[in-house]
Amino acid sequence: MLEIILKILFWFLIFLMVNTYFLYPILIWFLSKLKSTPQKKIENYSPAVSILISAYNEEKVIEKRVKNLLSQNYDKNLIEIIVGSDCSTDKTNEILSRLVTEFPQVKVFLFNERKGKAGVLNDLYKFASNDILIFTDANTEFESNAIRNLVKHFQDPSIGGVSGRLVLIEKKIHQKKGVEEKKYWEYETFIKKSEGDLGILIGANGGIFAIRKSLFSEIPTDKPVTDDFYLSLSVIKKGYKFIYESLAIGFEEVAKDLSSEFNRKIRFAATNFQTITFFKSLLLNKNLILSYAFWSHKILRWFLPQVMLVVFVINIFLIPADNVYLVTFLIQLLFYLLALIGYLFNILKVRFGLLSLLFYFLMTNIALLGGFIRFLRKKHSVIWQSTAR
Image (tube, rainbow, N blue to C red):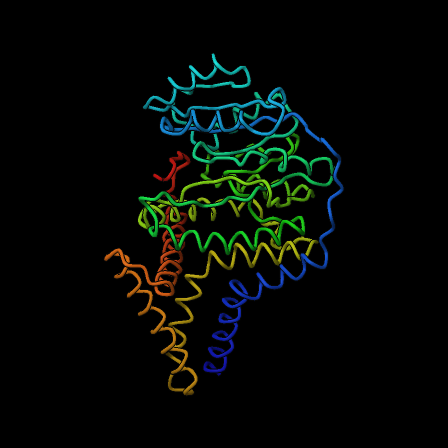
């Protein structure tokens, strides 16, 4: 009897793994082609926008970021840029103070104590004058038509949020160091677009997204959450669509190395686990496609490390039962061995496509497990600090 239970559990968990990374992306893409409807467009629809930026020690990029926003193919009189410096200790405050005198569209708030990104955004929201809020990061750069393409969808009252497309680029000195991150992000982008076509985007790109000011929900500051993920789900929870616009493009550099990316993933995993505790109603929502997306794209994927461990242990017990379980066990061992070789190649600064991707996949899941442990131990902080790039 125990053997039968273990076999059923083993194959059920295998199915969940396959669903998360293969079946779900294919099915959500297929559904998006069946259900998505073209957006009605009004020529020259240009609402006034307030752009919110939380900055901490961004002296290297903050001036370029502000000027990039003001160089958009959009009426500058309709743009308001609100920057909050989260107790920066470099020259960020000095640069921002100068920019205020040069550009009337810029408002700056210099905080004297660390509030964390969520705390800064909560305060900046109160000073926004316009009905459309655009969120971006200091290290993001918008393509010239990004704002126009981002906000054009708000002519539809059923749409509460729009995410742009974030494109990861590589500095020449970092080329090949972030290849795995970039490839994984392209896979993520494919899923995000399909979800967006259905109006159920599960998590906007933090560097480029917009929501209606009336739908802004104060981001918790007593518990650390992922701000863009929290705001995205808040909009969906209120019954509005959150869509994806491929032509609203933002650029960011990949992490300078896998070590930086690993630490970033642990930090975000911890805050992501905290964030989902605020949206339990989406797990069994009346919109079944939304619930399926939430389970597949987020919940199951984030718990995949635990699933992989359980599958490995069960497989060991089932080896005597049938030769098929010996094969599945050897396949798992081969996967981990190849991922380990990919890690060794990474140390040697050698890239071998498949091995590097297997290592990156395993590294991502180890980071997820580390983030989950940090979440359980409540060791993550609301104080935000950007990844070095």
